[in-house]
Amino acid sequence: MIHRLTQLFPLWALLFSLLAYWQPQWLVAGKPAIVPLLMLIMFGMGLSLRWEDFRQVFQRPGIIALGVVLQYSLMPLIAWGIGIALQLPQELLIGLVLVGACPGGTASNVIAYLARANVALSVAITFASTLVAVVATPLLTW
Image (cartoon, rainbow, N blue to C red; front, side, top):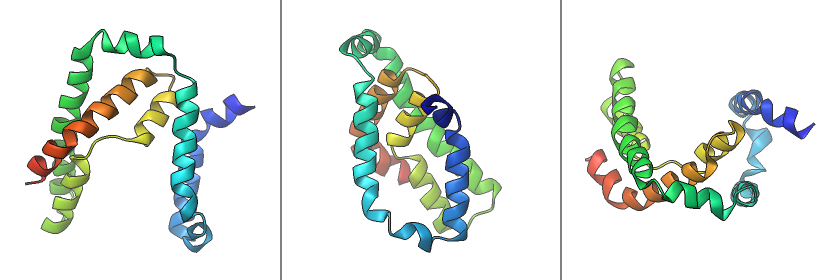
């Protein structure tokens, strides 16, 4: 049963996004639950990982570096391209590039988990890109 629910995660995400767009007031009361729910999700994913998973990831630091380089090269570039293609005003284009220049987070790790991908690698890249963000995000936004 749980497996089936997780397989339908993209559908749930789409339905709740449409609901939030259509009737935002129905979901506003849940706003204080966002941080605790993110903590619960990260804790649950963490329980699924072993030290061995991270040991295997850290044996190949180049793959983490590649992930970080792609995070800070492709994402802002794609954001810029989308903004240009949509002919966004300058302030929206800058905002889109800013979002593209930010590190990944819980969502990318959850998607990796649901896709049965290498969650330890996703967490390691998220960690590394968050550390690099202190310098990279302002530089890329500038």
